[in-house]
Length: 304
Image 1 (cartoon, rainbow, N blue to C red):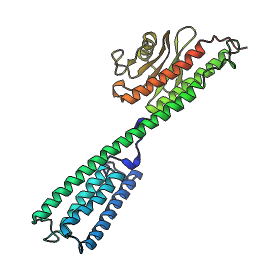
Image 2 (image 1 turned 90 degrees about the vertical axis):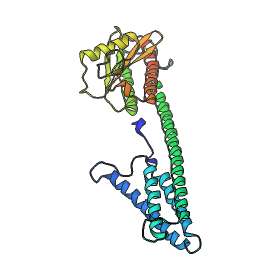
Image 3 (image 1 turned 180 degrees about the horizontal axis):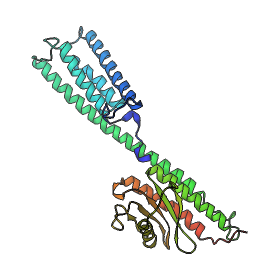
Image 4 (image 1 turned 90 degrees about the horizontal axis):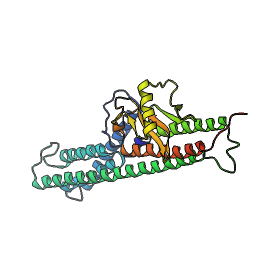
């Protein structure tokens, strides 16, 4: 689903999941932990070498390198793990008295405070940049989705040179509306992976289900009543709205200046929709309305 696409390289979830089972995600997080462990080991080896040339109390700042790398590539929790473990290694190996966690030198205490301050600030800033990067990628994905959706839906608009009122048969228009309904369900699923259906207006003015995400999807009398209310009034109804709020479906009208051509129903509470999901569903409704009204404006004749 589109609203759930997040770059795996910028995972902000805890380093270890609470789920049970040795699955691929567990293996991936274990590998990340091992990478952090290797970085800390290499940093410690480097510090042992540098201890001969610089003041040992300054070696703690070298552990900022794996902390920054962890924040960039693995997320916040990897960074927290890295700079905390880095402090413990520094205190245990390079601070007198050695091989204890006791710090007696005021200079070492000061360096530790500066170290943690820098580590927290850097991790926080990287986290902000990471979230902005995810947000921009998500917006770019939405642009691509709208482009694909516009191309597929608007391609169904009849071309005057190809179709005229005289050569559009009832079966042709029915096939077009079936395809239009399936495209609507396809793109609605990319936004929200839940059961959904599409209604279109018949020639006699009634509302008919044209496409369903599942053949087992059944509607109750209350569902039909809510869909017909949306069709008649051109307003949303169903779950999360003030009209037919007890309904499990959320109904979105496909309306234009002269009325409503159809209704999109999704098995979801509208209050739980993200604003971007709401806007994308409205975009689908608007694009489908353009295509549907064009075909409905051309009278069909019976099959020959």
